[in-house]
Image (cartoon, rainbow, N blue to C red; front, side, top):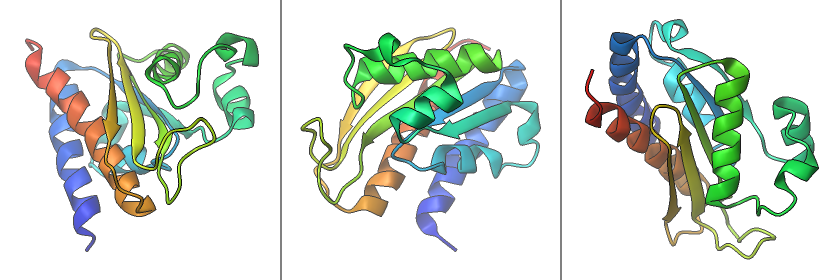
Length: 167
């Protein structure tokens, strides 16, 4: 058993309960988590009731191919930023025609990214009935630990928004 994955699945189970009860759906665009957010959401039995799709958008080429976001649309937006995460969250929501779009982008480590962000930098965005962006700075250089921390923050932020809204 992987205790870090178990923690992500525990969050996903609570999210699944909320989404199913509300008849809401979600799509994910993730980068530095490498699919952990989608994997957690898909690990819950009955995921097809709420999970419509996801993509690991790790490069510009992937962004264009998987999300059809042209270079011009993000020409003045830095990739590892809240505005960029918001564009990805809105795009996956619109493309999949779902209630919620969730996106993540960042620098997992062991070094920072080419934009000047240190390892442990992550931006998360949620697009739907509530719009939210946030930045997480773990201060850690451990790649796998950051991947799990980023996924946990994305899922816990989604759960917080779901649980704060009236059913």
